[in-house]
Amino acid sequence: MPDRVEVRAVRNGGVDHIEVPTAEETLIAALRRERAGYVQRNLPDRVAAVDAELSRLGVDPAPPAGPTTPPKGAGDGGEPRGAGRAARKSAGRRAAAERQ
Image 1 (cartoon, rainbow, N blue to C red):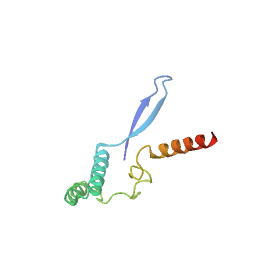
Image 2: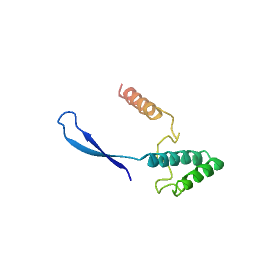
Image 3: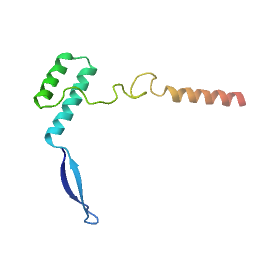
Image 4: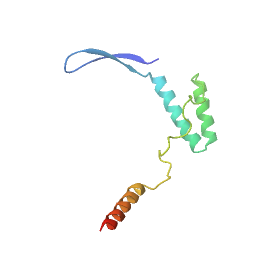
């Protein structure tokens, strides 16, 4: 469970509380990110090593439920950068040439 830390506003002196993750929560989150990278790069030996460390910490090594595929267009390499802009630009030039 995150720690609650008191913070004071500089302008008006108001007091609020924020939740700061504990060191163990930060370590677990980092290990899960590391594991996801190894799964993506297909490195089963390293995945097993991270799973062992997560188990040692008393955490289920399986990743938490969430999207398993990246959102559409998120670095999928489907269309080169600027290709859509170039297509729109050439269409605009064609339209201008047709008007003349």
